[in-house]
Each structure stands twice: as C-alpha cells, then as structure tokens.
Image (cartoon, rainbow, N blue to C red; front, side, top):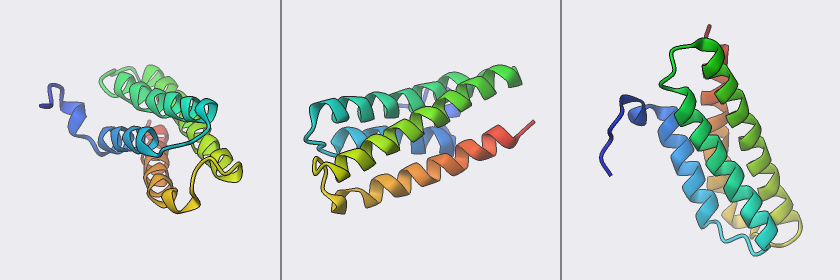
Length: 113
C-alpha cells in the first residue's frame, strides 16, 4: 500500500502498525484474550491515526491518551496469555520491544504542548 497522507511515514504510525500486526500474528491460543489483545492493538493504532492529522492539541492529546490506554490493555492481555499458557513466552520479546517503542513515542507526543 502506498502512503496517502504524510503522517503515515511518522515513526509512531509505523510502530503502531507494526505492533498491531505482531499482536495479530502472535498466535494467542485463548480466543477471548486473542480478541481482546487484537482489538486493543488496533485501537491504539487507529487512535494514533485519528489524532495525528488534527491540528487541535486537545483533540490530539485525547486520541493519544486513548491510544496509550489501549496499548496498556494489549500488553496486559499478552501478559495474561503468557501467564495462562496461551502464548509461548519466547514469542513475546518482539511484542514487548514494539510496545516499549510505541509507549516511548506516545509519551513524547503527549509531552508536546
């Protein structure tokens, strides 16, 4: 797919898309946790995409805060999946690395005024 809007090239967008893909591909055996983690990762990605092009700082921050909450929910679902044996711990390292990078990028966006 070709980039249509400029924000699609930003690191936060690219990392959020990568994280959503990694969660989708993680192979969580528990259907409920798989659904929860996938929906939360998609929510993080889509809220970032909705906030990035908006020039109103309050609107941007609202979407980025929602994205941060959804990211936390996705990470918690992954942790729960590992704890319950529905996801191999060895598969989590790239997910955690991507989530950590995304959390840092969102934090930087939220600190901007």
